[in-house]
Image (cartoon, helix red, strand yellow):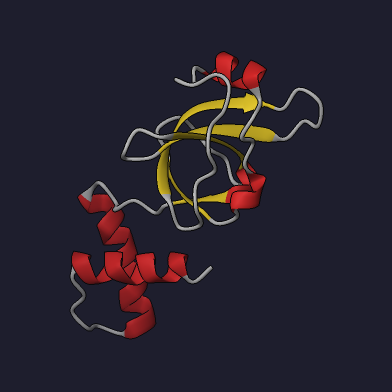
Length: 124
């Protein structure tokens, strides 16, 4: 099971895992609207701003915020993490070394590696 933390970027894959009314959890997790929050559409990108456990069924719930400021409460079954670009030269070197082993000694740019990884993640 994928682990999530506050600050993770995610994309909605199954909007049916949304809780549009769950006042106690909205309050506990610090939602702006503690009465009702809309569901995000499939493909919506958001950032995790809070994490909590459902009080009765034990699933993990994520407080999500879209770039426009709207918020949504969703179980982890409704989202996947968005791959972020490696942040250090060492991470790119490791990826480049792997690509060299797989593809031979072709020159591969960091941008090509990142585009390839994003395409692979999007296909899952």
